[in-house]
Image 1 (cartoon, rainbow, N blue to C red):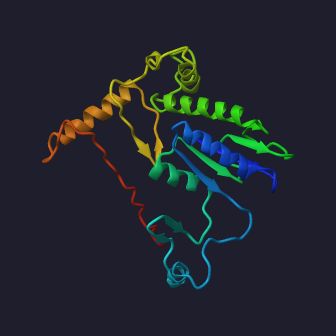
Image 2: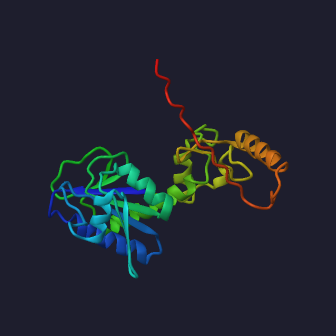
Length: 236
């Protein structure tokens, strides 16, 4: 899940993030974070080897030492683009973004700031915030197991069922469209909703194809990647 924390300067955002991260890590959660600033600042500086690499044309530049790895890209990235990269490579339970006021994800307002769209809590205590985050992580974990068809056959949409499962009121198998095997189809890193029928069709088609290929191991997981190659437009 993604959680944004925003507010005016010196409102206590970083302290809240610091305490939240520590509490969640102590509880065994995997946590990543992003710090955003509206100012034109850089971790790099003129004269450094990494800066010289960039000036020569390299972007991004990676600084690697015995204690850290820093990826420096000298251009702005959108919030969700950063989030996708972090989630893809590090798979945290929660990605905390400090400083972004906008974006289609839940947010926490800190200090005397007008709540933005998506704000779920305003100046919460740390215990209350931790409880909220833990509940949302539990819901997200259940939701990842569901087809996200929102067909209503269980009596609610997928998020509603996920909340009921996380609260111990229902079980995952309450989903009428839950496939026997996990089949995922991602387009542009976005998972497509799939029920029993679609999952069975995809699996049987792919397994049938693989049976004709040399080196296939029926007992292994399968990943197929299709690259979209855009044709160059013809000049008239």
